[in-house]
Every structure is written in C-alpha cells, then in structure tokens.
Length: 165
Image 1 (spheres, rainbow, N blue to C red):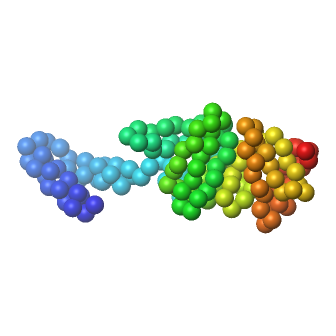
Image 2 (cartoon, rainbow, N blue to C red):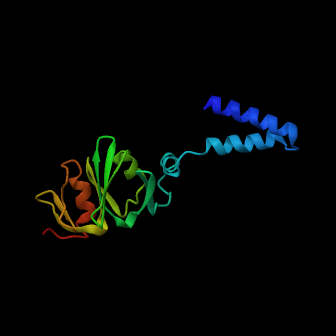
Image 3 (cartoon, rainbow, N blue to C red):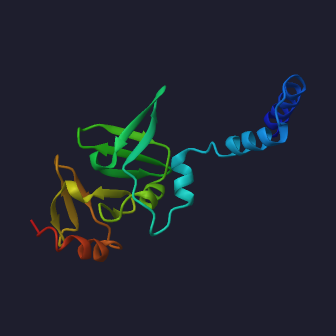
C-alpha cells in the first residue's frame, strides 16, 4: 500500500508540473478515496449499532462476477468455521468466506434468528417449531436443530408465532 501511495504521489507531482492543478487538495482527496475503498459490507460491520438500519441485500462473489441476494430471499445460513453457506428460497446454495457471526451482526433481528452455533434462519420461511424436540422445519423441508443454549431465546421469539407441530 505504501509503494502504491509513493507512486501515486510521484505521478501527481509530475502531472502538476505540466498542469495547473492544486496538488495538495487533489492528493488529499485521492488518498481519502483510496483509503475508503473497503467493501461496503465490511465497513457496515464495523459501524453496526442497535439503531442502524437493516440491510436489504447481500453482495457475494461468485466466480468472476458478483451475485446480489435480497435478504427476503435468504431462507437460512449455515456456518462452517470461517465460511457460511447461504441458502435461498429458489434452492440455490452459495459459499461465502465470512463467518456466521458477521452476518448475525448486520441482519435484521426481527426477521433473522440465530437458533444454533451453526444456523441462522429467516422467520418468514419457518413452517414448524417443536420446543420438546428442539427442532424447526423450514419451507422446502429443511429441518434444523435448536441448540440447548439457545432454546429459551428461541422459544421467547417463536412461541407467539408458531405452535408446536
């Protein structure tokens, strides 16, 4: 990064010799632009607070292009170490090199619920909830176990919404 900035400063200096630019002003603007090229997703993670607005889409890399997934299309997410599988309502599965914790920090708590160390579900796709078996069933037939540590929190959220099947 430092080498890039040095080259950048030298180029601006040479350009300023031939043109009538205000080099310090341009240089400050360009350096600020360069330093702010963090992906929007990562910068959003670092500024997440309780009152921040919920995101409506997630952009993920997929080969040579990027895929935009609307959060209302996400059925659930499965964490596998430092990777996360995103499952959509059309049956597709995407692998992303971000942790489940990073997604839990940015998703709307009213729509998404962490039910296990390895699972976050979208409540819109919840079909069945059974407290005694500590399990959930989503549309499409996917069954997810609820962890013992999270069963109380899950029950507080889900009991008013869904009856035991």
